[in-house]
Image (cartoon, rainbow, N blue to C red; front, side):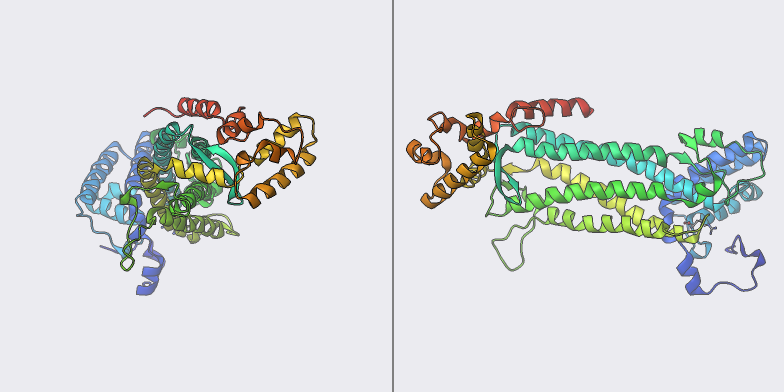
Amino acid sequence: DTKKTWSGRFNEPVSALVERYTASVSFDQRLTEYDIQGSLAHAQMLAEQGIISAADLTAIQQGMQQIRDEIRNHQFVWLQELEDVHLNIEKRLTALVGDAGKRLHTGRSRNDQVATDIRLFLRTAIDEIISLIKAMQHALLSLAEQHIHTIMPGFTHLQVAQPVSFGHHLMAYFEMLKRDVERLTDCRKRVNQLPLGAAALAGTSYPINRERVAQLLDFEAVCQNSLDAVSDRDFAIEFSACAALIMTHLSRMSEEFILWMNPAFGFIQLADRFCTGSSIMPQKKNPDVPELVRGKTGRVNGHLVALLTLMKAQPLAYNKDNQEDKEPLFDTVDTLTDTLRIYADMLGGVRVNQETMRASALRGYATATDLADYLVKKGIPFRDAHEIVAKAVQFAEQKGCDLSKLELNELQQFSIQIESDIFAVLTLEGSMNSRNHTGGTAPEQVQAAIQKAKAWLPWK
Ligand code: ARG
């Protein structure tokens, strides 16, 4: 019997196209487990409140167990004419247990039901994503720890700026991901509120106990307004924004890996299993994985915009527009979890060419600021020192060497304040070691940052 549960007042069936256009079961069947959990909690509360009998509850529980088994064994027949996951399950339940199945929907609507399902789905996804981020941070930390003293050119405008510790550079991503975890943790509180009990939009006349359902499903609280409970998807938008930021962070790291792998940089190599070759050019080894991460950031950011646009200007309360929230959310969760998994693995296979990094830092006058700071410490105003060093850089450039390779008398042409102690200042190590304060690149500080990070990250 596939007669629509709501067809009582209709005189003609929907067309095949309308049926396909309005159905969501092809994708929302992914919510099955959450739908069943929500139904079981609702039924238990109905029984505890004397709204359905204990016998009905037992029948519903047994029927749901069988449905779970059928789905697990791929025996469950999903029907498009039954629209969505909710009606497919309810119909099957009724076929299995009769009137008890028809009583399950007492005091409930698909509107509060679907909002509950998505919240349960997202809550689980958030927990999974947080643990995947932490696994990636773990991988970042072990790489950073090996490279506290490895010197690379730090860049601004992608031009050599000042020498930094490679470990320090990696720890910048640790900080970004830490904020991502904090954002998700905060978002989870607003996801974890129970809509059930709002029914279609106004609540229900049965003597329900929403707090009990919240307790059974492990929600922190119940949504405080029935219209809001069924209609807003701000929690999903917020999750999507968190996801977009995580992908955006990973896209930055990907862009760096792609550049660093280019022989013109030659800073790192990725393990072969993250690269592919070319079908025409035999010499190629392409960084496909980071390139795809960069590309997939576009779709996750796009889903955020899709959800914002979906919600924009919707009148209260539930509108069918909201059925469109699922595919972007599912794809966001899938893209993000796959990306995080692959990244943690990829970081373990990064090989670092320390000599190339160092040589690159030496080529770009990375210690010019240190020379200016040296002059300032001798009493020269910073702006004048800047000018003096710019001239010295110009001179070294013409000579085709680094500042540290100029003779003392050559340097003294630009300022007689320069003495032989300058050569310690102009080394890459001297420059890096001198930035010795919280957040600076001196190895001592990078070590401290790694210790703090370890204390923050539960060690798994
Ligand atoms: N499939 C619907 C959705 O995803 C479930 C809620 C339908 N409610 C309704 N009144 N048609 O939003």
